[in-house]
Amino acid sequence: MTPTVAVLSSAVGVALIAIALFDVFATLFSHPRRHSLSRAEIRATWSVCHHLPGSRTLALAGPLSFLVVVTSWTMFLGFGWALVYWPWMPEGFLLATELGAAGTSLLDALSFSLVTLSTLGYGDVSPSHGLLRVAAPLEALLGLGLLTASVSWLLSIFPVLSRRRGLAYEIRLLQEVGNDSADPGPPEPLPASVYADLTSRLVASERDLVTFPITYYFHDDDVRFALPAVMSHLLDLAELARRQSTCPDAHFHGGLLLRAIDDFAAGLVGRFGLPGDSTREVLEAYARDHVVGAVGPG
Image (tube, rainbow, N blue to C red):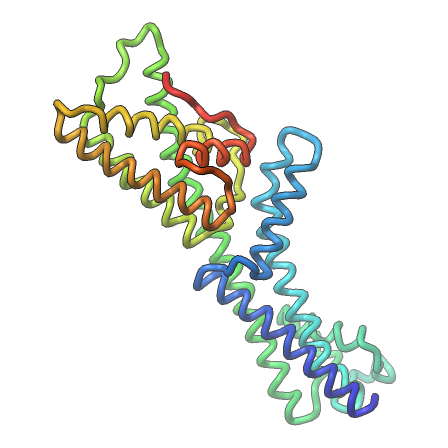
Protein backbone atom coordinates (compact mmCIF):
# COMPACT_ATOMS: atom_id res chain seq x y z
CA MET A 1 0.00 0.00 0.00
CA THR A 2 1.38 3.41 -0.98
CA PRO A 3 1.78 6.14 1.66
CA THR A 4 -0.91 8.24 -0.05
CA VAL A 5 -3.46 5.42 0.07
CA ALA A 6 -2.52 4.68 3.69
CA VAL A 7 -3.05 8.29 4.74
CA LEU A 8 -6.33 8.49 2.81
CA SER A 9 -7.59 5.24 4.34
CA SER A 10 -6.78 6.43 7.86
CA ALA A 11 -8.39 9.83 7.24
CA VAL A 12 -11.62 8.30 5.93
CA GLY A 13 -11.64 5.86 8.85
CA VAL A 14 -11.26 8.63 11.42
CA ALA A 15 -14.01 10.59 9.67
CA LEU A 16 -16.42 7.63 9.84
CA ILE A 17 -15.64 7.14 13.53
CA ALA A 18 -16.21 10.85 14.21
CA ILE A 19 -19.55 10.83 12.34
CA ALA A 20 -20.76 7.84 14.35
CA LEU A 21 -19.68 9.28 17.70
CA PHE A 22 -21.24 12.66 16.93
CA ASP A 23 -24.51 11.03 15.91
CA VAL A 24 -24.56 8.86 19.03
CA PHE A 25 -24.00 11.90 21.22
CA ALA A 26 -26.62 13.99 19.41
CA THR A 27 -29.22 11.20 19.58
CA LEU A 28 -28.72 10.06 23.15
CA PHE A 29 -27.52 13.14 25.00
CA SER A 30 -28.80 16.07 22.95
CA HIS A 31 -31.45 16.63 20.29
CA PRO A 32 -30.82 15.20 16.81
CA ARG A 33 -30.32 17.84 14.17
CA ARG A 34 -32.77 18.03 11.28
CA HIS A 35 -30.19 16.56 8.89
CA SER A 36 -28.47 14.13 11.27
CA LEU A 37 -27.71 10.57 10.24
CA SER A 38 -30.05 8.92 12.75
CA ARG A 39 -32.93 11.26 11.99
CA ALA A 40 -32.64 10.62 8.25
CA GLU A 41 -32.59 6.86 8.86
CA ILE A 42 -35.60 6.98 11.15
CA ARG A 43 -37.65 9.09 8.75
CA ALA A 44 -36.69 6.84 5.83
CA THR A 45 -37.78 3.75 7.78
CA TRP A 46 -41.09 5.45 8.67
CA SER A 47 -41.66 6.32 4.99
CA VAL A 48 -40.88 2.79 3.84
CA CYS A 49 -43.26 1.27 6.41
CA HIS A 50 -45.96 3.71 5.24
CA HIS A 51 -45.71 2.27 1.75
CA LEU A 52 -45.52 -1.40 2.67
CA PRO A 53 -48.72 -3.44 2.21
CA GLY A 54 -50.65 -4.62 5.23
CA SER A 55 -52.45 -2.90 8.06
CA ARG A 56 -49.88 -3.65 10.76
CA THR A 57 -46.65 -2.75 8.95
CA LEU A 58 -46.59 0.76 10.44
CA ALA A 59 -46.26 -0.79 13.91
CA LEU A 60 -42.86 -2.10 12.78
CA ALA A 61 -41.52 1.39 12.07
CA GLY A 62 -40.42 2.23 15.61
CA PRO A 63 -38.62 -1.04 16.42
CA LEU A 64 -37.07 -1.15 12.93
CA SER A 65 -35.89 2.45 13.27
CA PHE A 66 -34.12 1.58 16.50
CA LEU A 67 -32.41 -1.42 14.91
CA VAL A 68 -31.42 0.55 11.80
CA VAL A 69 -29.86 3.36 13.83
CA VAL A 70 -27.89 1.06 16.16
CA THR A 71 -26.76 -1.06 13.20
CA SER A 72 -25.58 2.02 11.31
CA TRP A 73 -23.56 3.18 14.34
CA THR A 74 -21.96 -0.27 14.54
CA MET A 75 -21.14 -0.31 10.83
CA PHE A 76 -19.69 3.20 10.82
CA LEU A 77 -17.48 2.39 13.80
CA GLY A 78 -16.55 -1.05 12.46
CA PHE A 79 -15.64 0.16 8.96
CA GLY A 80 -13.97 3.28 10.34
CA TRP A 81 -11.62 1.33 12.58
CA ALA A 82 -11.03 -1.21 9.78
CA LEU A 83 -9.79 1.59 7.51
CA VAL A 84 -7.48 2.74 10.31
CA TYR A 85 -6.06 -0.79 10.71
CA TRP A 86 -5.85 -1.59 7.01
CA PRO A 87 -2.54 0.22 6.26
CA TRP A 88 -0.93 -1.74 9.11
CA MET A 89 -1.89 -5.16 7.76
CA PRO A 90 -0.05 -7.52 8.19
CA GLU A 91 3.19 -6.08 9.60
CA GLY A 92 1.53 -4.39 12.58
CA PHE A 93 -0.21 -7.54 13.82
CA LEU A 94 0.63 -10.93 15.26
CA LEU A 95 -1.26 -13.95 13.96
CA ALA A 96 -1.93 -17.24 15.71
CA THR A 97 0.25 -19.97 14.21
CA GLU A 98 -2.79 -22.11 13.41
CA LEU A 99 -4.04 -19.52 10.93
CA GLY A 100 -0.93 -19.32 8.77
CA ALA A 101 0.14 -16.07 7.10
CA ALA A 102 -1.71 -12.87 7.95
CA GLY A 103 -3.97 -11.42 5.27
CA THR A 104 -3.59 -7.95 3.84
CA SER A 105 -7.12 -7.31 2.57
CA LEU A 106 -9.66 -4.86 3.88
CA LEU A 107 -11.81 -7.86 4.83
CA ASP A 108 -9.14 -9.02 7.28
CA ALA A 109 -8.99 -5.54 8.82
CA LEU A 110 -12.78 -5.44 9.04
CA SER A 111 -12.86 -8.86 10.72
CA PHE A 112 -10.37 -7.74 13.37
CA SER A 113 -12.26 -4.45 13.83
CA LEU A 114 -15.65 -6.11 14.39
CA VAL A 115 -14.19 -8.70 16.76
CA THR A 116 -12.58 -5.88 18.76
CA LEU A 117 -15.65 -3.65 18.67
CA SER A 118 -17.87 -6.46 19.92
CA THR A 119 -15.28 -7.18 22.66
CA LEU A 120 -15.28 -10.88 21.68
CA GLY A 121 -11.47 -10.92 21.76
CA TYR A 122 -10.80 -14.19 19.90
CA GLY A 123 -7.07 -13.56 20.18
CA ASP A 124 -6.30 -15.04 16.73
CA VAL A 125 -5.05 -11.62 15.57
CA SER A 126 -3.29 -9.27 18.00
CA PRO A 127 -1.74 -5.83 17.45
CA SER A 128 2.02 -5.67 17.80
CA HIS A 129 2.78 -2.04 16.96
CA GLY A 130 2.66 0.41 19.86
CA LEU A 131 -0.02 2.65 18.37
CA LEU A 132 -2.23 -0.29 17.49
CA ARG A 133 -1.87 -1.69 21.00
CA VAL A 134 -3.51 1.55 22.19
CA ALA A 135 -6.08 1.82 19.38
CA ALA A 136 -7.53 -1.67 19.76
CA PRO A 137 -8.47 -1.31 23.47
CA LEU A 138 -9.91 2.11 22.69
CA GLU A 139 -12.16 0.57 20.06
CA ALA A 140 -13.21 -2.12 22.53
CA LEU A 141 -14.16 0.56 25.05
CA LEU A 142 -16.23 2.34 22.40
CA GLY A 143 -17.93 -0.93 21.54
CA LEU A 144 -18.81 -1.57 25.17
CA GLY A 145 -20.07 2.00 25.51
CA LEU A 146 -22.19 1.64 22.37
CA LEU A 147 -23.78 -1.55 23.69
CA THR A 148 -24.55 0.04 27.06
CA ALA A 149 -25.90 3.23 25.50
CA SER A 150 -28.12 1.30 23.07
CA VAL A 151 -29.64 -0.83 25.83
CA SER A 152 -30.21 2.26 28.00
CA TRP A 153 -31.82 4.06 25.06
CA LEU A 154 -34.16 1.13 24.43
CA LEU A 155 -35.15 0.89 28.10
CA SER A 156 -35.84 4.67 28.17
CA ILE A 157 -38.31 4.40 25.29
CA PHE A 158 -40.81 2.14 27.06
CA PRO A 159 -41.74 4.56 29.91
CA VAL A 160 -42.29 7.27 27.30
CA LEU A 161 -44.67 5.05 25.34
CA SER A 162 -46.45 4.05 28.55
CA ARG A 163 -47.08 7.69 29.54
CA ARG A 164 -48.35 8.55 26.07
CA ARG A 165 -50.67 5.55 25.91
CA GLY A 166 -52.03 6.28 29.39
CA LEU A 167 -52.91 9.84 28.37
CA ALA A 168 -54.55 8.62 25.16
CA TYR A 169 -56.63 6.05 27.04
CA GLU A 170 -57.91 8.64 29.53
CA ILE A 171 -58.94 10.98 26.71
CA ARG A 172 -60.60 8.06 24.92
CA LEU A 173 -62.62 7.19 28.03
CA LEU A 174 -63.81 10.80 28.32
CA GLN A 175 -64.84 10.69 24.67
CA GLU A 176 -66.69 7.38 25.04
CA VAL A 177 -68.57 8.56 28.14
CA GLY A 178 -69.68 11.64 26.23
CA ASN A 179 -70.95 9.53 23.32
CA ASP A 180 -72.76 6.91 25.43
CA SER A 181 -76.50 7.58 25.27
CA ALA A 182 -77.07 5.31 28.28
CA ASP A 183 -74.74 7.42 30.41
CA PRO A 184 -75.58 10.92 31.64
CA GLY A 185 -72.13 11.93 30.43
CA PRO A 186 -69.47 14.03 32.11
CA PRO A 187 -70.32 17.45 33.54
CA GLU A 188 -69.77 20.47 31.35
CA PRO A 189 -67.27 21.75 31.98
CA LEU A 190 -65.22 19.01 33.55
CA PRO A 191 -63.78 19.64 37.03
CA ALA A 192 -60.77 21.94 36.92
CA SER A 193 -58.60 19.16 38.37
CA VAL A 194 -59.25 17.03 35.27
CA TYR A 195 -58.06 19.79 32.95
CA ALA A 196 -55.02 20.36 35.15
CA ASP A 197 -54.15 16.66 35.06
CA LEU A 198 -54.57 16.49 31.28
CA THR A 199 -52.37 19.56 30.88
CA SER A 200 -49.52 18.21 32.98
CA ARG A 201 -49.60 14.85 31.23
CA LEU A 202 -49.68 16.46 27.78
CA VAL A 203 -46.71 18.67 28.72
CA ALA A 204 -44.85 15.53 29.82
CA SER A 205 -45.65 13.86 26.48
CA GLU A 206 -44.45 16.91 24.58
CA ARG A 207 -41.18 16.94 26.54
CA ASP A 208 -40.81 13.21 25.85
CA LEU A 209 -40.97 13.91 22.11
CA VAL A 210 -38.23 16.50 22.51
CA THR A 211 -35.97 14.16 24.49
CA PHE A 212 -36.80 10.97 22.59
CA PRO A 213 -37.99 11.97 19.08
CA ILE A 214 -37.84 8.35 17.95
CA THR A 215 -40.94 7.65 20.05
CA TYR A 216 -43.01 9.63 17.53
CA TYR A 217 -42.47 6.75 15.12
CA PHE A 218 -43.82 4.08 17.45
CA HIS A 219 -47.31 3.46 16.08
CA ASP A 220 -50.14 2.01 18.21
CA ASP A 221 -52.44 -0.41 16.38
CA ASP A 222 -54.87 -0.39 19.31
CA VAL A 223 -56.83 2.83 18.80
CA ARG A 224 -57.60 3.04 22.52
CA PHE A 225 -53.96 3.89 23.18
CA ALA A 226 -53.25 5.97 20.07
CA LEU A 227 -52.70 9.60 21.07
CA PRO A 228 -52.94 10.89 17.47
CA ALA A 229 -56.51 9.58 17.32
CA VAL A 230 -57.78 11.60 20.29
CA MET A 231 -55.84 14.87 20.18
CA SER A 232 -58.64 16.61 18.28
CA HIS A 233 -61.10 15.58 20.99
CA LEU A 234 -58.74 16.93 23.65
CA LEU A 235 -58.75 20.22 21.75
CA ASP A 236 -62.58 20.17 21.83
CA LEU A 237 -62.54 19.67 25.60
CA ALA A 238 -60.12 22.57 26.08
CA GLU A 239 -62.17 24.88 23.86
CA LEU A 240 -65.34 23.94 25.73
CA ALA A 241 -63.73 24.78 29.06
CA ARG A 242 -62.40 28.05 27.72
CA ARG A 243 -65.94 29.13 26.82
CA GLN A 244 -67.15 28.65 30.41
CA SER A 245 -67.08 32.23 31.61
CA THR A 246 -69.30 31.35 34.58
CA CYS A 247 -66.75 28.83 35.94
CA PRO A 248 -63.46 30.68 36.46
CA ASP A 249 -61.45 27.58 37.46
CA ALA A 250 -62.49 25.61 34.38
CA HIS A 251 -62.01 28.69 32.19
CA PHE A 252 -58.47 29.18 33.51
CA HIS A 253 -57.37 25.55 33.31
CA GLY A 254 -59.00 25.19 29.90
CA GLY A 255 -56.82 28.07 28.73
CA LEU A 256 -53.71 26.35 30.07
CA LEU A 257 -54.68 23.16 28.28
CA LEU A 258 -55.22 25.09 25.04
CA ARG A 259 -51.74 26.59 25.32
CA ALA A 260 -50.25 23.15 25.97
CA ILE A 261 -52.02 21.76 22.90
CA ASP A 262 -50.78 24.68 20.79
CA ASP A 263 -47.21 24.02 21.96
CA PHE A 264 -47.62 20.32 21.24
CA ALA A 265 -48.82 21.07 17.71
CA ALA A 266 -46.00 23.58 17.15
CA GLY A 267 -43.53 20.88 18.17
CA LEU A 268 -45.03 18.46 15.65
CA VAL A 269 -44.56 21.05 12.92
CA GLY A 270 -41.05 22.06 13.92
CA ARG A 271 -39.60 18.63 14.67
CA PHE A 272 -41.53 16.31 12.37
CA GLY A 273 -42.58 18.59 9.53
CA LEU A 274 -46.33 18.07 9.79
CA PRO A 275 -48.42 20.48 7.69
CA GLY A 276 -51.18 22.76 8.93
CA ASP A 277 -51.98 26.44 9.35
CA SER A 278 -53.86 25.96 12.62
CA THR A 279 -53.54 23.71 15.65
CA ARG A 280 -56.53 21.62 14.58
CA GLU A 281 -55.10 21.10 11.09
CA VAL A 282 -51.77 19.99 12.56
CA LEU A 283 -53.51 17.52 14.88
CA GLU A 284 -55.49 16.12 11.96
CA ALA A 285 -52.24 15.72 10.01
CA TYR A 286 -50.80 13.95 13.08
CA ALA A 287 -53.69 11.49 12.97
CA ARG A 288 -53.29 10.94 9.22
CA ASP A 289 -49.55 10.35 9.57
CA HIS A 290 -50.30 7.54 12.03
CA VAL A 291 -53.17 6.26 9.89
CA VAL A 292 -55.81 6.76 12.56
CA GLY A 293 -59.00 8.76 12.51
CA ALA A 294 -59.09 11.97 14.50
CA VAL A 295 -61.93 11.93 16.99
CA GLY A 296 -64.37 14.77 16.75
CA PRO A 297 -66.71 16.10 19.37
CA GLY A 298 -69.10 13.68 20.91
